[in-house]
Length: 271
Image (cartoon, rainbow, N blue to C red):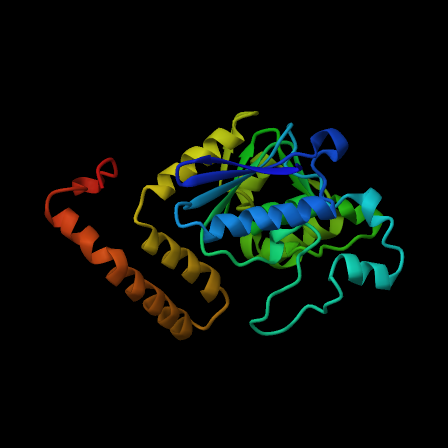
């Protein structure tokens, strides 16, 4: 199997393993398997945080261009990629992206553990995740710029939201390499670790997130996603709605634990 899931309590690490074939470039079978694995994670009540990792030293080298070269007419492209469906408007389910889950809207956080290349669609897959942990030797880049293949998995939408329009435009239009140190400096990733350490660091972060009461974690995450670009009043209204529901689910009990003596002076060790 090109995709497998390794579980450690509430943290599920979803492993993409096509390294020997194509440095974890994504083909249709892998994309379908990745979608299925992430949907299973989102539906399982015992799972709280997922880590997405590419086995063999490459996060994902993008769309499998050997496969993409066979999509030489619109009918075949629509059948294979859009599954015969136009991208629907409104609240309808979106068709699977070429890189798999990049159009899924999950209810739980996903952390990308990036080693080696995360380029073209692989970069878009990492940008889809909520947080990116990169090895110091890892890198991003719109390498598909060389071949006339556009961004189809949200890269031109998500990158400007992370780094700003002008910087995103320069990265997208030039297709240049963006090393991990620069990615951290411009807000394209959130943590840089030593080579070979991205998975362990991402899993440690995932365990830290998973030990908190999850209703508030998911409510705050949902608010961040839902309110981007909204007018302030509407965004605040959305935050209130999400937060109040989470408070009544778990927040009152948590406040009671603090009142009983836990967590004083910012202590996170006993919650």
